[in-house]
Image (cartoon, rainbow, N blue to C red; front, side, top):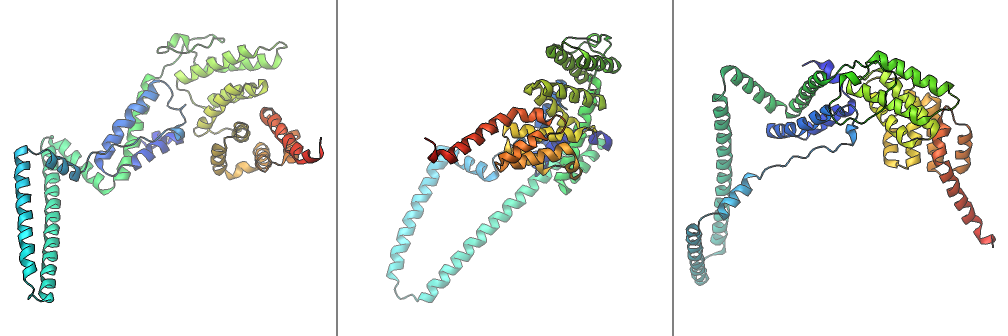
Length: 406
């Protein structure tokens, strides 16, 4: 297995599979987890969403463990035939009668000393514990014998080469189940990457303009534009947006989404892909299209783990402001806990952190002052929540002076 293939995958997907296999405590659990994960990842790959899904938000699959041996034994004892049940009932009635007779005879033996009674109880207690210990040891021995015979029968049915591989794999699993699961996840993802490469297409369309349409079937290479055409198409859209006196956002958005679609179906994830999403996010910010901006910044969050960008910290600052707008404090705290140290020096990130502090402390004077000092396009994002905070500040002021106002 090539380690470089594993390193090219998104960090969120690697962490997702590693966490999934870390829940496995034995080889059987690893087989179950593999049967759950592989169809899930293959389906995402078939739909072209493997790199688009935020795997950190996906729920780790749970393993359904079978009944233990005690439950099975109890079930067997309950499902015995009526004849055996009646036999057991007769034995229990005889034992109860015998106990009553013994109790009556013991009551008449008052000449026995207390020391002999204590010795008798001690012996019965020790013999009972000894028998229980013996039964437990016999049960463990039977289980070891069953596992050994099962391993031998499975190994015997394999060819000599496969038997050697099976024995090596069996011993490796016994030595380190968690490591084996981690390696298996990497192996499976490497196989998925092979599937992805086999299914990727190379477009042949030479049109700069193309209407965005949702895919309902496998993409046709004749309707997909290759990378060099997509570069010229993006340049055309950017020039149109900068120079046109009568700009149509719906047209520009439609062209940018068609470029994004062609990149997705060809599995192109490089610096140009990052540039397309950054360009679309900025235009959406300018027009206050919150839905498109959220889609772009979600994709950028995943792309930055594969392809770093010079504007990465700028959009990190926008992400903090967007989470303030949505009041998603849980995701905000998670984002702040993962901030790179060198990002704190970036003006957009520094400004966003100051806004977050003023917002959390309800320091409205400081918040409105920072709004006037917004760098880059931060003011566009703050426009989405500044009126909400202004109304909240007015409510607090009114409530404070209310006793003196008729």
